Image 1 (cartoon, rainbow, N blue to C red):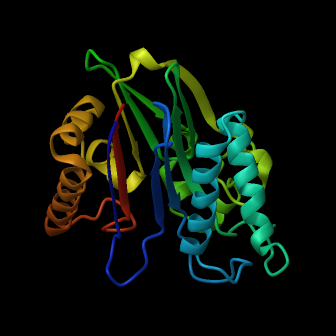
Image 2 (cartoon, one colour; image 1 turned 180 degrees about the vertical axis):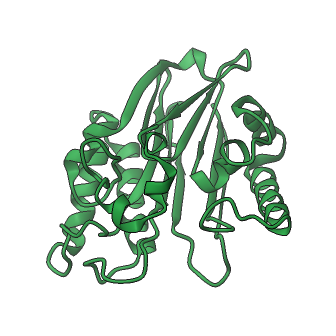
Image 3 (cartoon, rainbow, N blue to C red; image 1 turned 120 degrees about the vertical axis):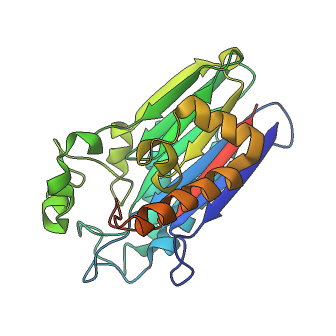
Amino acid sequence: MRTDLLSAPGSPERPNEDWAAAVRPAAGAGGAVVVLDGVTPPAGDVGCVHTVPWFTARLGGALTELSGSRRDMTLTEILSSAIERTANHHRDTCDLSHVRTPQATVALARWDEETVEHLVLSDAVLLLESPAGGVTAVRDDRLDRIPREILRSHEATDRLRNREGGFFTAAADPSVAARAVTGTTPRARVRALAALTDGAARWVELFGAGDWADCCALLAKEGPRGLVDRVRAREAADAAAGGVRRWKLHDDATAVWAEL
């Protein structure tokens, strides 16, 4: 198995709120990939004394440990347990019911000799490449269904956050794990996989520089560094042309590429 990982902050002036890990058990042919994208809150009260990187590190650590050690648990159960474990770290000091309590999007994959399991929550992306080169993109499209003008308002977005008819993220409620997009694929039908935060997925989703198959081809040839470098170049060109297409010029960008 070959695994390549890169997580790059959007700005040197602020901490990276993404988190990623790849797991390879000491024995056997399995493994796991975990990618989180911490949700940047607007300035003001969030009900929590901890930072988003604090949250993603703890949630990511729990997901990594459970993915590698608990083969008896489904990915949904693992996400639920990891959210509960993380919430317990700050339940006594923070208001976990606050709509802006620290939270993250999730892309999670695990495989053994027989199957590849996947889980995606919110706007992370998981790509499954077949031996023939076909690529399946696993996405949670609930954010796509919300009009852009609503998402430009923090207050309007808050009314849809972790609500029926809106979208879901991993915050403090373990039951949200049941809202994730999950599935399994026979191991023989997956040659490689990629997990991307939306900052890295911009190359396809925002700039249209290629499709998901092109993205996998780029990752196979140049690794996550090649993908992120191209995203940064597109962002800079977009700004120079007079338009920043997202509310952040440069977002944290994380990509993991695993050849099984």
